[in-house]
Every structure is written in structure tokens, then in C-alpha cells.
Image 1 (cartoon, one colour):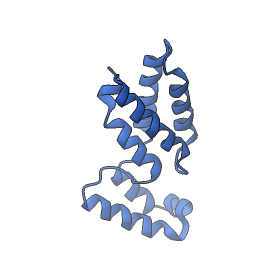
Image 2: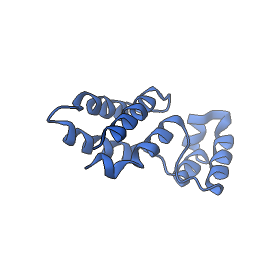
Image 3: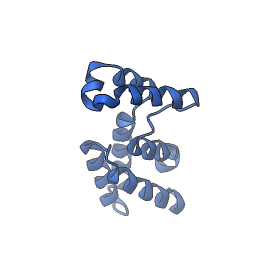
Length: 118
């Protein structure tokens, strides 16, 4: 992986870890990847990191379904309908994924996936 891709991914990884919407599994995978940079474990941790964040990014249709569900109402409370409406709006504009800070950072990291796995 080239230095520009590495630096970009480090920056986005910190954004992911700082996001209120980042789950503990993604934070742990991100930290393990950061800790492995420059070591013999870097390639292996990169694969693990990519695998974890691919599982964590929320497709827009999943977000819509969740926000419209009883479980979504429990998570989002009175804002569930607003979350669903926002998700429909960004989907209509071409979004494939949730645009919360964590999903946005993951999407940007995954755009570099092929370069990261070199």
C-alpha cells in the first residue's frame, strides 16, 4: 500500500473511532489495525479490519427498514420517522449506505479497499 493511501486510511480510521455511531467491534478492529502498521502483522490485520467494517456499514435499505420498525423506534425514539425520511431522501439522491459519521468513514475507507489489500 502506498504512503498516500496509508495516511488517508489512518485519518479516516481515527474519524471512525471518534464517531458516536461506531460500534465497539469496529473500534477494536480499527485499533488493532493501527497498532499493526509497520509490523509483520499489518497485512493480516488489514484483512481483518476490512472484513469487520464491511460487516458494520449499514446499507441504506437496511437503515430504512430498521428506522420504520419497532426496534428502530426503540433506538431512535421520536426521531425514527425523521431518520427513515432522511434515509429515503439520501437514497433518492444516490446514497448506498447510511450517512452517519461511522458509516461515512467506513465508506471512504472501503473506496480504497483494493489499494489497502495490495
